[in-house]
Amino acid sequence: MASSRHFLHKPRLLHIFLILTILTPYAISCYTSIFGFGDSLIDTGNIVYVSRGKVPDCVIPPYGETYFHNSTGRCCDGRLIIDFIAQNLGLPFVPPYFGVRNSSGAVNLEKGVNFAVIGASTLDDSFFEERGIPNDFKHVSLRCQLNWFKDLLRSLCSTPSSCKKLLQSSLLMMDFGGNDYIRTLTAGRSVEEARSYVPLVVNTMASAINELIELEVGTIMVQATLPLGCLSYFLTYFRSTDKEEYDSCGCLSWLNKLVEYHNELLQIKLKHIRELHPHATIIYGDLYNAALPFFLSPRKFGFTKGALIACCGTGGPPYNINTSVDCGYPPTFAFDHPFLYVNWDGYHLTEAAYRLITKGLLEGRYTIPPINTSCVSTVMSAEHSNFDYVR
Ligand SMILES: *[C@@H]1O[C@H](CO)[C@@H](O)[C@H](O)[C@H]1NC(C)=O
Ligand SMILES: *[C@@H]1O[C@H](CO)[C@@H](O)[C@H](O)[C@H]1NC(C)=O
Ligand SMILES: *[C@@H]1O[C@H](CO)[C@@H](O)[C@H](O)[C@H]1NC(C)=O
Ligand SMILES: *[C@@H]1O[C@H](CO)[C@@H](O)[C@H](O)[C@H]1NC(C)=O
Image (cartoon, rainbow, N blue to C red; front, side, top):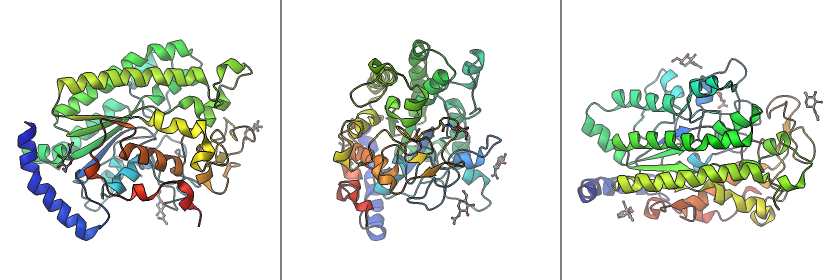
């Protein structure tokens, strides 16, 4: 199976290599497309189309100010991890599915599509409904995104073999988990309750991954959940006078422990899937450990404003967050030089932080197994720190 795949793809890869060397001298590509599934860590603009009846999140300034100079719906001042990976693989930014679907002109989807939507949970809406947990982000869960993908495949490739060809050389990126727990905790439920959902969340992710493997997706990179206990919004929301709740970085240990439990179970599950499907490449993208050093020693990475204070907000010290006003709405504003911050809006990291995380992923330090480095250009390795933001 594996050897015939290599045999089939070699001439094609060589062909792509030659084209890309001419068009983009800095990049070669093994992957011919990227598909995104997940939440605000992956969404490149679906939220613009999937409105929630109020001004949607992340679609107003100052979102996008650093790179796109426009708010594209990305929950960041600039590029996300999926954007950096696309650039480093010599592929275009992954277009949001609903943007493509709503556009009148023909769009080439062969290089990938993004199904991720801000706020998406792993578990279905009915799960939260049954437990009386409020859910502002309906009809965008993992199951919905899988269904959109399957719908798209029906029109994208006319035969099973053309689908297979497309998917085998694609990289599928997936980020789920955080919203299931956040939704539960901000509804006032206990951390024990949130913890009891972890096996179900991980199993739901695993069954989606199995379905994707059945569709012959070649490589799936599943992202770990970030250390939520270090994010300014949660530090503010769950602020406590009990010093025991904090670790030496000033992060909420109980919240990070919940995330660690999720990440641990996820890794066990992925290992099991790899054993069952040795022909598929299942990568664990360890965002948790890639980001943790920022909180341990922010200055070492150029984050001179510290790691726990959000760049955008109006909350004042210590975290600059007022939990009743999100970034983008008056009177919030962003401080100058977002690259000096780890936290962007309290829930999400800055482009500078995502860039460093991506570097760690592509260099193989935080990917298990490592991403095939022969697929990666040298763009990232030239960017050793975020100091080149300073002009
Ligand atoms: C996009 O299309 C969906 C239905 O396909 C529609 O409900 C929505 O209003 C459209 N959004 C925009 C911004 O055009
Ligand atoms: C900014 O993005 C909005 C949609 O989010 C789009 O309508 C507008 O044309 C964009 N502006 C520029 C200058 O690209
Ligand atoms: C947070 O924002 C709300 C709404 O603007 C305001 O009423 C409240 O005073 C603010 N709280 C703090 C602590 O600044
Ligand atoms: C990495 O990708 C290159 C190019 O497709 C391939 O020749 C090589 O065998 C791959 N290495 C591994 C370890 O998969």
